[in-house]
Length: 332
Image 1 (tube, rainbow, N blue to C red):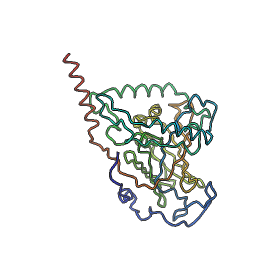
Image 2: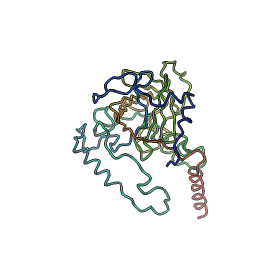
Image 3: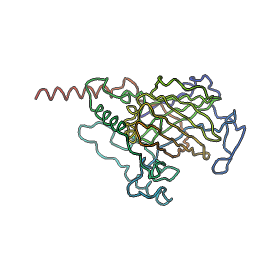
Image 4: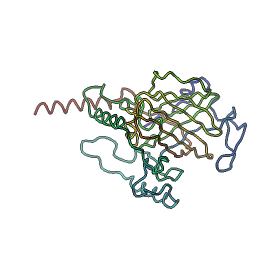
């Protein structure tokens, strides 16, 4: 949920170059996939700036009914979108559950991915995650067990503190809501600002040396470069990434460990469409690397501030509720 528009100056202060982040007239042109001139930044790079929506009804993995089908026809894509819309109906709240139960709170996407793939996963070709390693399965089991512990704040994940997590990535995958991301560009840097928990990645493009392997960060250590019209972002040096993604789709990534190497690719296809692809490589978690291909759609914005914040009552109430249950059990 969100209320107040984010001040660009707040984000741009990271680089102290606010004026450079305002879209400027193109100074060089090349053609996008639809044959129209691709916009450029003042320093001649492909212009990826704007607010983009990566929400989608395309599942991460291919449904069993489409086992041998990699792409949908236009008619099949339309039918899937209609089916998804029919499922977005309000239901009465469950007894004792004050959480969100109606569609007002959700914005998980209304269309299939622009690729019209039957799954977001493009490799392996069957559209499914590869097999987990024994180490990856052990991580998933340990993290599932940890989610059931409520003895104290040390047992709870960072998402309940609204510090990071959910669908903000990296990598970014569609979630139930807050599927927007805003891209900024200045000479030598790209800034990725996610709507979810307002995470910011400031990515240098100057091929500076990577951080030493012993320095670990929650969102990893990112370095970017241009390969023609495509922005390539390589990220490594992750901390324990699996604990930061307890959301639909992202629970499947809880097998990932600190050895994850992530490669993301951003390319503008036309004025309203951005291609987003990534490859996950973690031999400690999966038997092979795997890749996702999807699209983002430009939206007029603005990007709003995510209302949840560290110190919110979610964590407090989880612990208080667990303690109340424990007292009730002891009293029996």
